[in-house]
Length: 221
Image 1 (cartoon, rainbow, N blue to C red):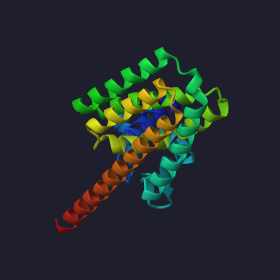
Image 2 (image 1 turned 45 degrees about the vertical axis):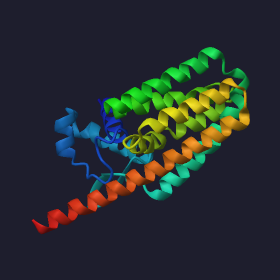
Image 3 (image 1 turned 90 degrees about the horizontal axis):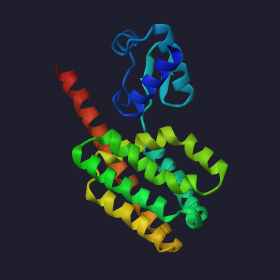
């Protein structure tokens, strides 16, 4: 049950169903997720070590918020990882793998139009993961995996505000790979990640303003 509790809670947090800054009430969560409070506490301790929740003595456990500094650092690391992966994987990305990336770009576009953010993020992550997996560097894959939680959380933020631009940026990356033009790949990747970062910051600031407005309304009641 502890593994189940951990998996359920982690998914709820990463997907945004448990929003940033939310206080995690053990009684309510154990009832809603149908898990014991003992298993829930163990899961929360594990999630705290992963940086997804924060425990404040005498106040409770809260979903850790993402700050502008977090976004900046995550995208710095993403840019380093993905541009390096592009350099290393160029000769290993077959026509079939590039076609798979194109299919994922289309799927991402379709899911965004449908409003299915969770699936859009899933296929977006798989798109970007292909060059990383084919860079033939196990430590690079390990680093990418270590950042999975944070990357997914910020991508969910930015995906809620993306439209057609994500598709055109993805196809530009694939096209550059097909042409074996590393400079164009790097340029397309950097542009795409820069745009994603800007949108993520916009979404984050929007959420902060909405949270403050909601708090002010509650004070007036």
